[in-house]
Image (tube, rainbow, N blue to C red; front, side, top):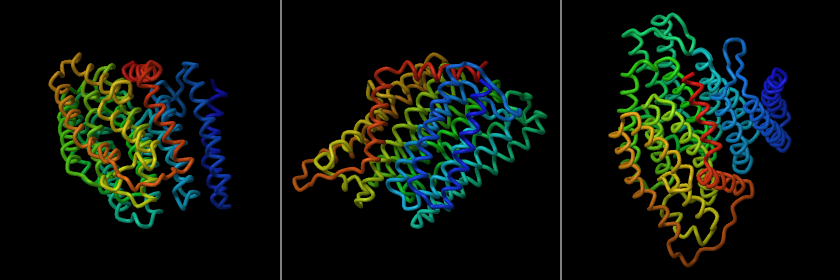
Length: 455
């Protein structure tokens, strides 16, 4: 176990230092190969560590356990997919790959944090490289500024809450808390801070602008990876520090309703594809909050499953959107007849959207089923019913692009998707269906992760 952990830290160091060295040499192909090999080795090593079933804490700041390893696996897989999209579509791949390596370190710090200080450092390492990544796309200056504002407010609120927590509980360790009125206020501040990271209403007002203005290959990373890291932080704070505060989870339940309604209703009026998917992503955050609001192991497991489903689907969808952007297709009307141009793109985008609605035998269906059942079992029937109603509302705005893609457009020529983008789409598509048909391995993973939080 100890040698495996040494190998784990060595791989992370090799990823960061190797990207910095190759950035100086500007060897794009070598950098892509390095990232692919190291990230794949990380997936294998984390799988081995999970199979060994042993928890470890390092320097009192980082823990490797079933919860952190679930996210570590998801982040490593997501970063492999992101690198493929960067290499295919970005002009500044070398810089993006280096920033992505720093983001991965931050994500790992967040998922394995044992103190609020570790969470703070991890969230900073996720947010700031993401801002600089958007800045590299010079046409996305406005999006970068808005993302920077959101990240700055989020980390300022987090710092304020952390200072109050130290005064109220006398410690910054996760898992220890004093039950005082001050800590109730601290819980609300933490939720607000993480609201910017996870697209929770009303802290998500700039999200559609950021998603629309940033290149689609980066938007996939924001929605699929950064948002996932935000939920990893939110879950640890709420369960490990505030599990005995019923009022904090009541706030989460109320925010869940407003987040779902805001995302779904606003999406109905959208014609731009990226803005529609941005509001869709906001609504998905609302469904995840339903599971968190139960503050029970089965609800948290359902929320984690939906986090997994959303991350994979979001990256897959934005791989297609990134390809469409290169062909100057941005709106629902622009993708009319896409099925005649590229059947894979049309079929994949359709299935991803149907999965987000909750089509049976897809990951989206399993995630929502677990979440709604947990809400019913834990006395939140009203919240489950509102979630189902919102899922029905979402059918209307997902139907528009699906119908448009299969419209009978006669003068459509075949168009090939770039190989790496197509590979990302196929991988996400297969995972969405395979886990939907046979979800037990992922259910086992999220169940163990949730159980660790409540241990």
